[in-house]
Length: 92
Image (cartoon, rainbow, N blue to C red; front, top):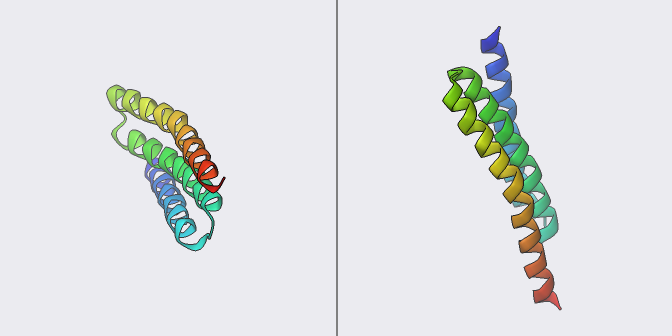
């Protein structure tokens, strides 16, 4: 049963990462590209990390996974905001 859950989590995480990559290629303006890459990549990475943590199921892996998830969810919006702000200054 846990194997099916692992497969689903890793597959969905990979699918979200693929959607982010396709969005990066297909969208035309910077803001749409940033939205695709930050949202889908963050959620895809969350699913992948949870799947890997369930696979190993060791306390240290769970701790590191938690720290990675917190770091990603704190830094991705800040990086996107900084990029958008620099692009906005460039256009003025």
